[in-house]
Length: 586
Image (tube, rainbow, N blue to C red; front, side):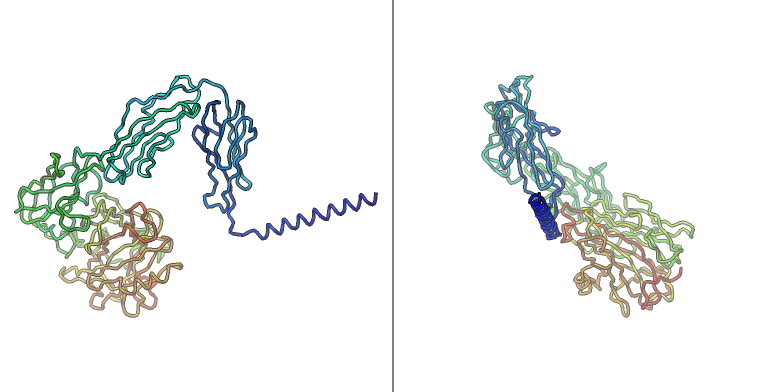
């Protein structure tokens, strides 16, 4: 009896020690280890965790997806509950052995998924036929070319239990593939002279298959859509365009020709019926003169009309455009297309403007609401005052679909498909205001972001023009005396501030570049611009101008291209340069 008690006591001690050792191991586990939380089995014919096969079924490759994708250990262990029915290899290859039902389990760590496999001697596939012996895949210039070949086969008999097939293509070529659904995919880099063989093989009866030939070719253009680059990607309502004689100083007079169908082969040649009124010059992506291209620049020479003809080279495909050149509009601000009638005559005596940003600088801060208008001509109105407003316009300098909109807590410059930096204003907002006598600094709170919620890059400037003498103007310098030119949110990399302060401000043109950062939450900055003494206590027109929003910010934020945004949160006048956070009273 005593011996049994000793053995029992020893057993308890051993179990306790083992438990302590296991606990210690747990404590030693790398805290950065990410455990698998789920496994999902997939494969040809798998549906809602079940797979029906026949005795003649070929080997089926299964795959197991481990979640999350960044799990530390994604090792999968495959097992079969009945190897007399099906076996599964360590790589997930399923092999039919006999009739019956078995459960295939894929386990990773503490989680697993199960697939129920049923094998029976049911009605099997006896034949597969293609509707044609050969198929031709057209490949657009930008690719890829696609053909759903699954719609081109017939599997017999009609009552076969499992009519699924496995697709393959030869010779092996990364540029020409067929997916599990039977879609042939051809990338632009494929050899257009090569011939391929696509094969469909029955899953339930691997001895049954059929093949067809695949040939390749470039898609030929049958039509053209021509649009002004600033009008966005939509097809124009008509092919009649009107310009003013003094529009020639802007770079927005770029026509873009797009072949139809999209991606079809062929470049375009542009000609003018009346070069004395306006000429048209083909240019490449860098703005250099080219023999043929999808882009051309309009050069205005005089009043009148001309017909522009766009022809796809070496074809009879053409499109005509009527261009009318009207007298000069009479733009009054250098580099901007603002007209005298658009300048506000009423002076806004407010000292700050808050576009819905919280927390607001003062309890009685003015809130603006934006009336969106896709034409880019809109007003930023506020209620309860004298009716003055911030207007917005766009110069349309090669930009596509540029506009200003309400961002909820800000005013947003949202351009799409900007070209390379051209040092011209694309979008701008403006207001006629009175600079307070005691104002030493203009403070602007800005943010950049992209469609991927990363910080983008932007280029902007702040211009003041004398209301009573439009020839007098100044670009505010962010490197003013006794005022820090730049502050950032906590977390902004120091090197961004250094880059900014080492030359991102051009004193000649006034352009300021906001560098990009990996996280738009820290992509918010406040800019302090010194107001020269002679510009204080003066009625001026303030312009906030945007030139370029960059497509590649260096952090992957523009991986899909386009849609960086510049957000104007608040701005106003500051009297105390040593306390630039405090706006002046209105």
